[in-house]
Image 1 (spheres, rainbow, N blue to C red):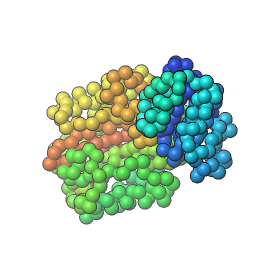
Image 2: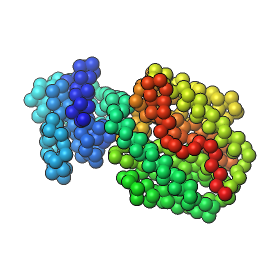
Image 3: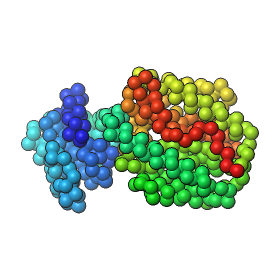
Image 4: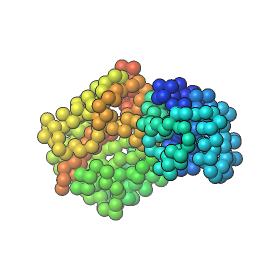
Length: 358
């Protein structure tokens, strides 16, 4: 599996006009080697004919057991010395590097004689965007378990709990049922705090009649979900119920338009224009969606803000419009969709109708 990913990357080096690419990003290292946890502690140097993973002795035994044979392993405390030797031995003249590289590494690379350096942006990220069958299966598994966890949470949540207690209920259930952990700090924002799109959970107590926004994502088999629902604890403010229906319809309009070849900006415009027509354009203050997979936000990080991004088959995207009214509250509905040959498939089976817990 990983040899094919590296081979695909190697075929792109000529187009990038480089002889080799230095990889440091954690999730890109994971994607290409299958080994997690190397951010800051590993470098992968890929040439047109081979790949060398450079790290220290802490990972040596584990890597010897798990690393595919086509990847060379170099154990050292001086990463740049190994990289320098490979550059010299293989007569590399044009070296590419991720534009997120650590500055100290870049500074050392600039000292190498007769070497042209080229910054690359999101080369591997774009490869990660289109999912292979095993990646789709793992992501679907994460989404299914997260959906089950949310349904469990609905049986537990009630007025009098704190927002943090809601997080802990969900977190404990997910870990007990097979998740390796959350992919971000779960958001629980109740009452007027729900007007903050990314409000961290606090010790605030949930009250009857409030709306509660819950945004969560959990890893299963290395891939993550990203789902949001806004529920009501008893009968909510009529204005918030009306806003809920607007957000739900905006989400559906975007979902109906997702298909291979459509521009991300077109999708954003569809959802944003509808919300604006309903009088809440200024209250929708974030992107319409992003990619998910190994990371909670991966290419396309915000497809509505990327003028040249076109949707491709087998990408997994979020669709998450929202409306946030100061001193009243907020509504967000978020689902993950798999782009199919002719449209998209919603992957979670949580109802999108307003849930009112009595």
